[in-house]
Length: 162
Image (cartoon, rainbow, N blue to C red):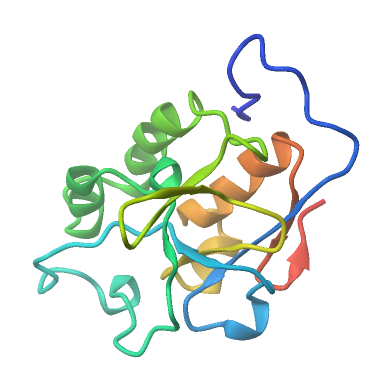
């Protein structure tokens, strides 16, 4: 289900803002603006598959978009194999689909704890492989559709989502 924002919110104006969605490692697909993680940071990573670990030499990250970041326990359950990806998607979708993701309502938490609006040219970063995103087994791919449904122009992994 595509998120349409909170009931009663007017639709955004005709000018679409561009948001980029990519892997941390694929800097050629990052937008010109700030860089925000949508990955849950875990203290214990020994159980995690290699593809899910945050890069040790990641680019400078400005903050995190909590509205698109999976819950810690849900992320752990998925990565450890306790739940299949379909259950992860269903539970994640229930939370995200009730959150307004329009320009002006989508917020990022900066490293100093303050909040700022996610804006035109900013990039949302994930760790999943491109193959997982192409197979719709990655939350960045799901987020791309929700954001498009909220009038963003979405560039995912270097191509515009139509």
